[in-house]
Length: 146
Image (cartoon, rainbow, N blue to C red; front, side, top):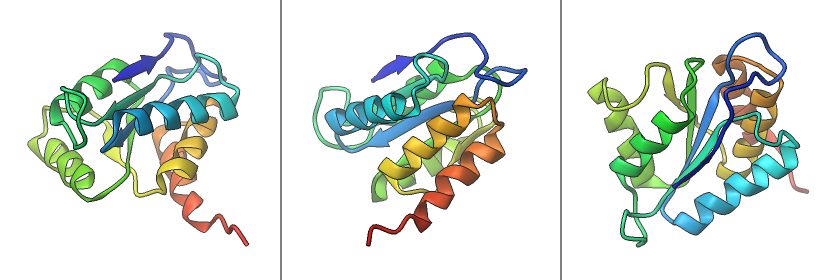
């Protein structure tokens, strides 16, 4: 897991929305985080954390890594959690259902992993709130490639 974060605002008046990227692979989560931050041109204004793989570096999903990542990026404005595949979805849903594992305002966002991550980070960099960040990421479902 990694996090790139600042305590500053990102164009809005409040703290920025945090973004957590959950993948079954640590390198995939890290790479998507790097891509999203780079394409957003937001530097360190948006707190983004990758939570990929298992704590020992294997493939899988780790509730421990997800929780740690969400707490790392939480600035009080909410945390958008984007996931790649099946058990990542189930793990995040379970953490949210437990109620106290993730920061208040953490939300699982139904979005394509790469495109959604870029949209979420770009939108968060404008200072938008969690609803707008989640909406932008979800709208990435509509990106056509032909």
